[in-house]
Image 1: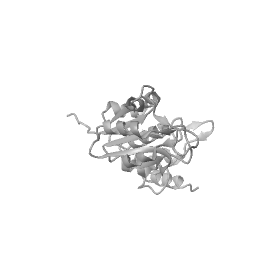
Image 2 (image 1 turned 90 degrees about the horizontal axis):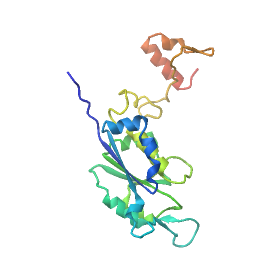
Image 3 (image 1 turned 90 degrees about the vertical axis):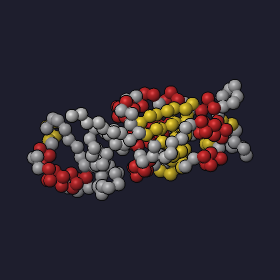
Image 4 (image 1 turned 180 degrees about the vertical axis):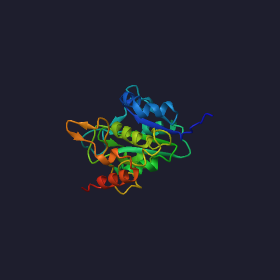
Length: 224
């Protein structure tokens, strides 16, 4: 008897001025398999396609003066308006001043049907974009050239939490920073049993699953 695995479907829409950045990463490993299984769909939207001038300009000088350029509100608005929204969707702006993206955020986002990610660039984005987004998100306390890498980070972290994406059902549950764990991830070992004089701990070879569980918890907490 054949069993059919049903996957929760997630759609990611990325708004960017550098659409070619994403292809290599999204076509490898788990993300490639997730798309092939129809667990996720990833759509890339070139913001320059939503400009109305012959130079396809997406930025301009800031009012009040100052260094750098600011991403214009008009093409962003047009692009957001063109994206077909699902019932449970969330619009995120990648921003150095946004709220920190952590594992619990990934778990929250995995419950949505669609996530739209705006990749900021230049000195920033016209402040009026706030009317059309749900949150500004940062992946760390640093400044990057653009929001493309943070967008990929969020998509990777959320995708691996979707049902059926990882090979083992418990893989995502037992990872570092998962909310229901009170300790960090334990040390891992594989073949060979001995490598340059370093041996795999005997308890992991014992087959005693209860003792192994205790050892892993103890060492994940950093105890001797």
